[in-house]
Length: 225
Length: 172
Image (tube, rainbow over all chains, first blue to last red; front, side, top):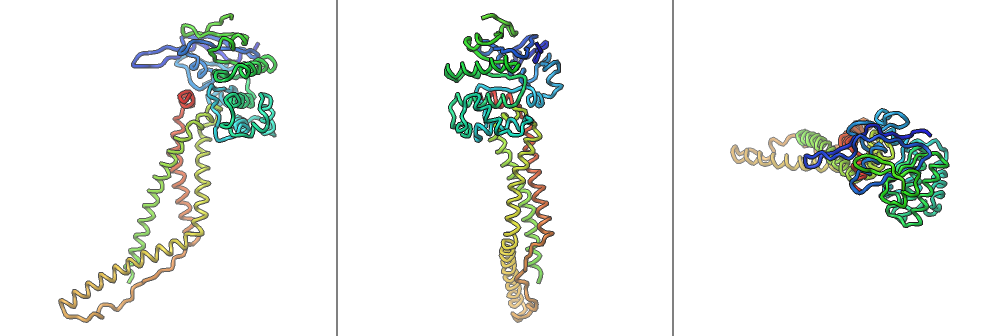
């Protein structure tokens, strides 16, 4: 199996009240294609930091994040986020003055997806994740939380990347919708060979993943559930 | 008597300088406010992978579109407005000049017993025809373009300091 993402001697800390707070301490971990990972840990353990480093939103204090063997800083963080990784945020982070369809099409235009009929492709994706054409043409603020999360997932899928990182994607959803989304992630990993990394605090979501990784003592540890 | 005309010309020049400087500052402040209001949107676009240079370019295009509309409007209304303003300024200068002359003449009559009519052998220029030529349009258009670009680029450079992680995760 291909290693998509690798943390190599990764360290991250920040200063608070002149004290050095270490979040990640010499972490070495690899994420494979075709695999669905969950990262768990208590609040403040560094889940969001790990997500930020993996998605190129932040840079480590030392060590490297490698995408298919290349340091993402060499690729360029902007280019890395543009071409190789899609992020699904807990609070969706959709552009609120646009419709669901426009949010997805905009992402495709920014990432330069090579599709002639972007609108058609976006509608296809939105339908795949459970939104009708009528709902797709509504402004995102007119959609429910679950629907907005689906739009955020469709936006991430539209970019055609190998690596999808999601921060508590089911945090504000009901159980039925959550299960649907987890099934979708499993399908993306197993049928489309994507690497899915979901940061969550839900044991239920973790049980559904191929590998549950815990943030313990400032390191990533695989645990069997 | 060209005094009033020269005064109008001088006033006009100062108005242009003032409007250029004040306009640049105001436009720059508006752009800064716009960036502040659109921080989240900019953060989302950066997180998706949009380049910072493109975001600055987008802002510039938005401002230039508005500038183009404003400029087109001013081409049609500029002649009328400048004629009205020119007439008003000139009238004020002429009135002020006549009052000064009258005061001077009264003083002379008082001191030397001279006739009122003496000294007033030149008619004041009391109207001007203002026309906006294509050269004027090009000059002012160019000036407006430079103001729009500088007032946009300088505050927009703050986008380069934006960190999408700080914008998005802080908001969460």
